[in-house]
Image (cartoon, rainbow, N blue to C red; front, side, top):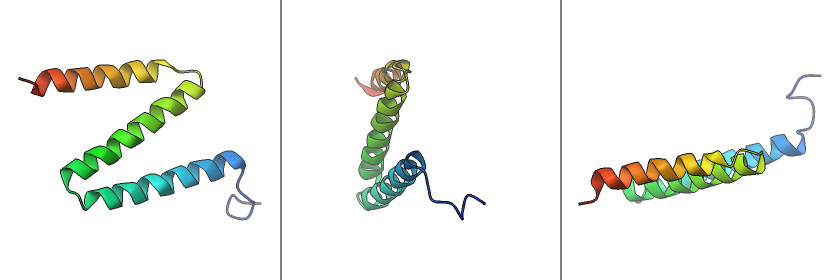
Length: 77
């Protein structure tokens, strides 16, 4: 039986739903221009960090925080 023939597992269904939601959100936010796209990526980054934490990798939050700190330091005056 191929993947297309068998029912999705709960994890596969969650991942498919997550991707579909993220893609829809990015498309919706794109109509707002760069601010909307940035908001969609922010939502995705938080979701990924939270998922990594649930999987035992809390360092994902640290890495995201460091990235944002570097970004702010680069652009704040």
